Length: 158
Image 1 (tube, rainbow, N blue to C red):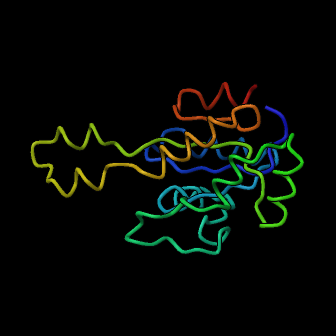
Image 2: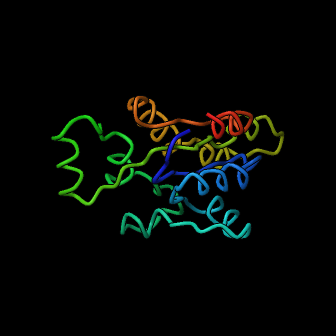
């Protein structure tokens, strides 16, 4: 993988998280992150920019809204080859995001538990994660999308 200026890292499955983030930092990336992912990275001694600080908007609604923001989705969707996109991003203070390391809430694993409540099931319906993945995938020419922790090492080596 070439130079990376900014990576969004927001994962439910923390397997290999620290190694992946450390590798991204070694490639030059600023790490944007949320909640438990940001805490895990900080505990490992990595510098992290909270998405809330980056966007200027706090996490709201008990964490239901964290990454659903134009500075995040614009950073993923902005086409670097389109002067209009670049100019619009500059006008709105939107920085490019080169890598999205995102995996989803463990919905299936949660709902099969015999003691799973309806409320627990509902809270494990991921909204932000799929939105991030779709935005990054739509701009696959410019944004690397990484979901599976097994893919972290080969992505860093690419």
